Length: 192
Image 1: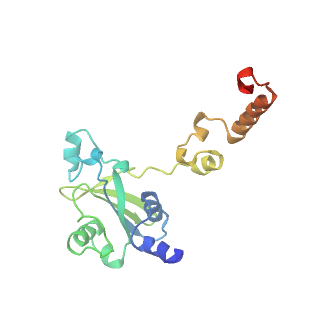
Image 2 (image 1 turned 60 degrees about the horizontal axis):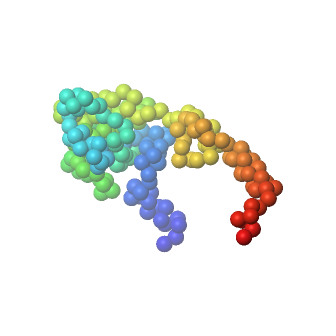
Image 3 (image 1 turned 45 degrees about the vertical axis):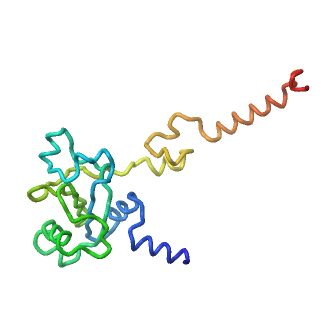
């Protein structure tokens, strides 16, 4: 299978990473929606299918890190007639798209809408939807600067080099240590 066909397969079957799916949703210039569902991890067991009232009782709120983007699609005219959220709820409970891999839209899921370049997130509650202000964290505005300076891309976190010496400083230190070794005389044990 050619690389081009593999990339197309991944694109069609949603094998992109969580960040890539979310970024594609945010970057699109057309009106669209994203379905987000809780990850299947220990931290989400008490949150799965819980109403916001139930979450409040156990001292929790919906957390972005507990969710993954399951599906992203443009808002077609048939979806934008009437209440967009109600239409999406019906669609994802009665007529699931063939390429959809999540469960039916249920309590604790989140529907993110992008309309007129504005993103809003809505918690599927036991009765209707509740808007979640600031649910999707803003992009790290230092990310590009940090990526140009960071020596460990796994540490893109807003702290440049996380207190480590720069790569240049590390190379200078390694070079000076190797010079010291060359200049030192061997001990009697090293000679034997």
